[in-house]
Length: 311
Ligand SMILES: NC(=O)c1ccc[n+]([C@@H]2O[C@H](COP(=O)([O-])OP(=O)(O)OC[C@H]3O[C@@H](n4cnc5c(N)ncnc54)[C@H](OP(=O)(O)O)[C@@H]3O)[C@@H](O)[C@H]2O)c1
Image (cartoon, rainbow, N blue to C red):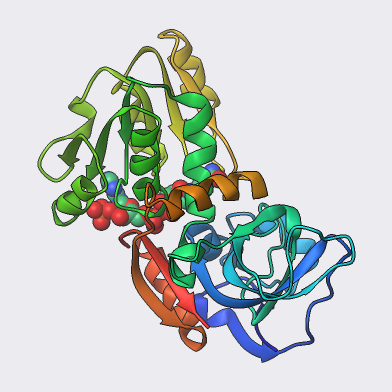
């Protein structure tokens, strides 16, 4: 089968498309014939030696990728939930070695859900890591009627976060640039702030704010949260101790969570996708043999919704 191998960290051109053996799958795993893969910032970060490379470096060469949708080709002997021919989707082994940049991937059955029939493989692949992140952060941290602020509202996590925060009953504000204002409104945001027109740090009174940029952006976003509220940051690797201590004086909680593979959460996402309460916006689709171009695109930090590879 065709697989992208990463023998050495570096630019996108280090992703080598080669022939490899089919993956082995354990008794509790299924073998998936991959139809679509989504690309995240962590894919490109890990490829260049950052992201979760530290956790994976002992396993070089790596097969990157975590977000898949496809069809079950074979099932391990203890798998009861899925059968050959089922269409499934999920985020495999995150934060671990997902090995999804391949024509076939082995996945624990416990990390998958059935793909809703009314959405495409591309939309399903898109609604995995980014959607799980938004769900796993927002569900325990916000409640009905709260004022919620989402930065990078047009991005992968942001566009799901706007929709999920609305389902959870929040009054939702998204921050984005001029070109994406209408898109963020179309996701259901109650208010949209164009950061090119309005300094977002001038906003005040939010119960919860979600940062996606870290560093000085996180510092500035902290002023938007009211005393006793919650500030959450997505990027990993930042030293949050100083800021957390300063925020303690205002009883503002600073949180970070690394998204985790979960079949239960995938089933929640699948339900919402099926009922169209949640929609994945796929802005760019690449063929498998141009996957490195998708890495270059995600590294721009300017993509809208999700970018996906079709096999
Ligand atoms: N902790 C975790 O488990 C976890 C999980 C997922 C993602 N993450 C991290 O979270 C971050 C965001 O991920 P993502 O997948 O959402 O990224 P993404 O899809 O690449 O985000 C792109 C979006 O960011 C927006 N953006 C860029 N600069 C901005 C600014 N100054 N103000 C407001 N919006 C801005 C862009 O909109 P404009 O073009 O309109 O500016 C674009 O739509 C990444 O660092 C990622 O690694 C962490």
